[in-house]
Image (cartoon, rainbow, N blue to C red):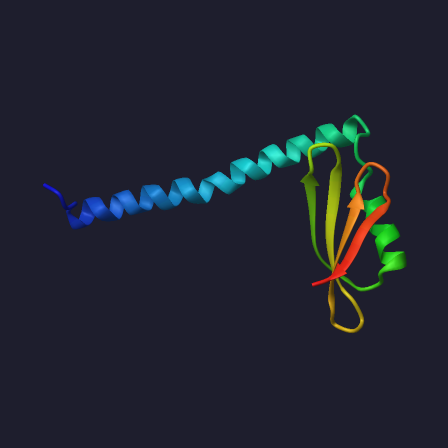
Length: 105
């Protein structure tokens, strides 16, 4: 009785994959709701305002943006591909808009 039959094994694998695939969507919805609350309370600046500032000081192609909760502050982590084809990670305080760090990846 230790081994699952082939159809049962396929069913178990399908259920597992479905549950695992759905987990990021649930997390993503929670993240979006949390960001909406932060914006509605003006705890963070709009991403569009942050990106205008970044594009002016670090021209290039936007690759990725993440909002990180560091406990005492929120940080936008922005990856840009500059004209020299170097990926730069720019960390911006989401409350003040101040650039915290810039480094080449």
